[in-house]
Length: 256
Length: 256
DNA sequence: CGCCCCCTTGACTCGCCTCAAGTATCGTGG
DNA sequence: CCACGATACTTGAGGCGAGTCAAGGGGGCG
Image (cartoon, rainbow over the protein chains, first blue to last red):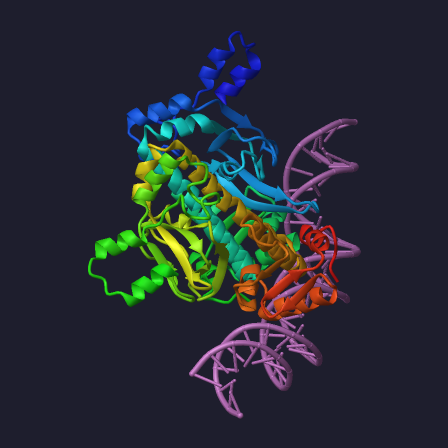
């Protein structure tokens, strides 16, 4: 916030200096236990800091990158939320994920040097730009960094596999329950409540992600409210009966 | 084939020797332009050869690995076809992919050191065992190997994203057309016909993968046959009108 | 030949989509 | 402060695509 005020109010005499002022510092970042530098010692963390580019502010609804663009950077989310989505030839959009602080964006672009999806900020957000070429140079010198990078890519693969399970096998109620439980557990990992949170995305975006319509999401919210599983107030969600919601997500309890 | 005859007919006086006889050689393998050693020079390829473990034969319907097992090896498919699938708490199975020669299995296990899905051979197959620890040691010495490994992981991510698009957005006919087109293009990359091939998986497995029932797949095959898009003979498929099938897969042409 | 498994086809059902109308919320400007 | 419009969401009625259930066909193997 302070940075953005400086940026907007002060003319920039020296771009280098300004870039320096915006430099991210992994060790000072509250996400370093979840993000790329996880498990690095101070020494290695500062070597990672040294290659990390600008800290960029992405206003709500702005693109971080677009499908088809040339790939040069990965992005670590410092603050805020994003959605990633693909668009096919016929113009259909499919949201492939919602990402939050501590998560890495752009890994799907490594294979072809082009982004395969677009990323848009769901609220005013901040990312650290990680030049992939320079990151690759570091891999040879910091084995722990490489190992953790592999874990993060692998976890992206398993995350997508569970979405495939969700889209391929589950009924609407089960999908939505799984979605809420997943959000809750990710907030818990960041020190927030797992049962009380604000949805950063619209009903329509949730529906698109889950392979359902906006109307179905709305009806499910009403149903879960009536079943006393949830309290709902616009985008504020309180999970009242987490065990039962988890049972529905797991498929061990029917929801009708 | 020759190896298996030797294995079955000759008693094994020296296991070491036998392992040696079974050693895979990347440079001699017809898949090395698609597989992990892609783009390596002879020198680096032999260093990769040196760490690769046994070449294992996996008979039809046998497990290569099981969900939950400890992860030690990646597997490169030399020959044959596999399916990978997850099973959730309620016992639902979701096939997450069909893999063929030149493709890498097990990357989803890196993140947690446990396999998140099971892999079963769809026909008698052969794989190269790649001890992941030793592969990691090589990464520091062969940057090209590391780069290509990242490309392969990234491509696995984009592959799964397109399945998400398929499951989330497409109608049954479009899904099945996309499935056939995808199979064709992968056979083409291996030097086989893109329009005439044998399905290694049952109707039921195709349906499970595409989020449809066996009956739906059967009806779609009949419909595509009637539309003169396909010739179908049990599991033999001939694509008669590839452009139209691709248009249906892309969603630019309706199929009714 | 006969059994088993895989597949096909038909009739019916149901979950979710589509279409449509109405309500709530928020930002903007008077 | 309220008026206004735009956007986001809710709710209902009806239809359709794909699932379910059931019966039958066909190929391969012992």
